[in-house]
Length: 214
Image (tube, rainbow, N blue to C red):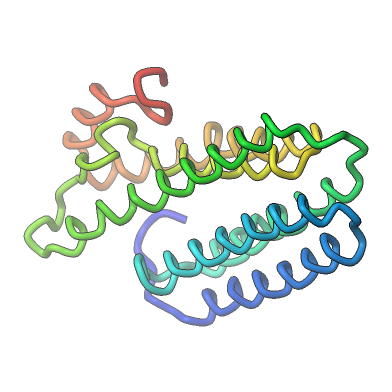
């Protein structure tokens, strides 16, 4: 997943097509197979926001080449989000909890903004030819090396709370574990090989994922 790939459109079209199919199925689950319309609308709006944000990141804000492996992995991940949470909401026997719903929406928006803003603040630096070979440590990345991953964990946790099923928490937990034991180590190795002493100095003074904690 790390490194430079030639920009291709086929992989991104695959992801976009998968998103559309997932959202159609999610609509069926939430509005035809489920009776609690208010909660259905809330979760579906969150899924639409997620789809629009991720699609804009992929095609407009941060258009970069991706590999087939990344395209397939992203498609699978989106399937978990767009189908997993609606299914868990449909089968939930728990009564709606307004407090958890509010917390879920706050986490969803904070995580979405954290992920998107951190990437957009880095974009001008990466686009500037004068910064070739330089490691970006500004913006939100001065608080954590993988602050964008933290954003992912938070918005997925928000969706889990919005879906109103305790088992939904297994999804953000799984995402967190994947980041900690797979994505972060691989990313660190890539950054270390690419930037050497720059990254060594950066990681000595910066937390990995959670600012001020770890």
